[in-house]
Image 1 (tube, rainbow, N blue to C red):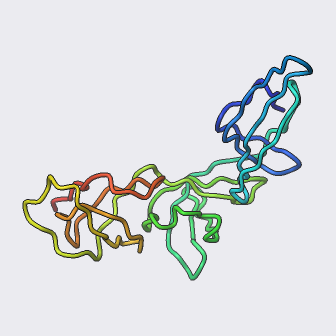
Image 2 (cartoon, rainbow, N blue to C red):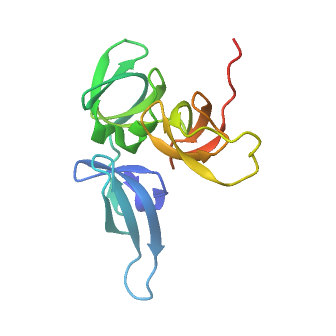
Length: 190
């Protein structure tokens, strides 16, 4: 059990049998009456954010969460197949469970899968992934200082703005949290 004094951003709690993550909180000590804590809770099942107020000292549950590293194998229709690296068991997750990260999910990448009561509820991608550009307008040689961008389609199907000097076949580093171009990735010289 957690006490309201344990609250911090990112803490995972269980309320009414459902897992939530504390997105924001504020301890309030009014001049009259008891202290309380105002929170914004993000549902780990639906992603919805709700406001909830707790009396100071009130207890909340600790959710039964486990995190397991798995490997993303392939997409089959609307399902994503992941394999446990230790037992080689495979599970299928829906697009909703994968979330927006599915746009930056290359095959054979290691991801962290969150389980609640032994059922998968979400995936956390690495902060950065390296993806190959599969379609874009031809680059302009020597124009590297410009902040001008052009749309580029990546191997996963995501379309992001990239600098105009990049071409088809170039590898780029992408921030999975914001879906933005970070830098040109180092090419393997084989």
